[in-house]
Amino acid sequence: MTEPLFRKDAYSREAAGTVLEHTPEGGIVLDASVFYPKGGGQPGDSGAVHWNGGTLEIATAVKGDGDSIVLVPSEAAALPPVGAEVRQVLNWDRRYRHMRVHTGLHLLSVVIPLPVSGGSISPEKGRLDFDMPEALEDKEAVQAALQDLIDRDLPVTEDWITDEELAANPGLVKTMSVKPPKGQGRVRLIRIGEGAAQVDLQPCGGTHVARTGEIGRIALGKVEKKGARNRRVNMLLQS
Image (cartoon, rainbow, N blue to C red; front, side, top):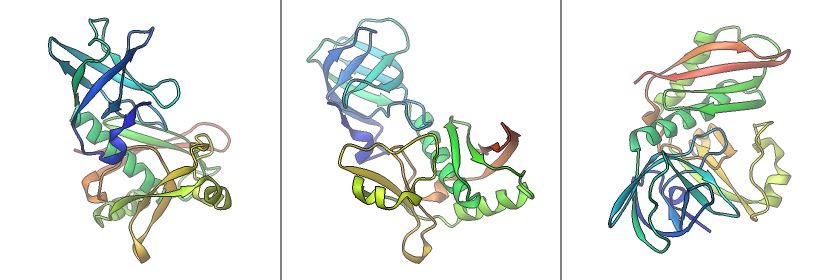
């Protein structure tokens, strides 16, 4: 099992760790990971691992067996030995942009209140696929509404509910293609706003900014038709 340090503090850029194993594919598994593993449309983190005697550049992180997280090297290289103490260092600029985009997409699902059939995140932009039979009537109005939510600088917090509570509240799940992880006994929720000012609450395992104002300026890109009922809405970071 790998302790997901990014879950406790999404702003942690470095952390210590101990090598538990090497994978047959040439990756390493640590006892604790500051690297977010690919999932839910969010890419795995990149960065480097340093130890006494070497440095290993990390291209991405993926989910391994059970609750393990595998750090995947950028190229074949010498690995830190099992049992070695290492220092993990994130490519922070890339991760932080993922956090900004991811939180922005949650807000996009607020201003376009339709079922989500897919999505993806990159450092420059993100997109959501909506069950949207008819085209957006006014993309500029949607962009303005999204920017207004961002500029409110709403707090972004997390909460946890049981699997049973989620089953009793199916309306919390907006995504048709990605189901929240069950079987652990509890599910993580991301809340945007609080009290009467709450605007969104949905299951999510990704990393997010602490306040919506950190997202900054955005622009909506192309709205692409991807089937009879499916339309893809692109959101771009402007800085």
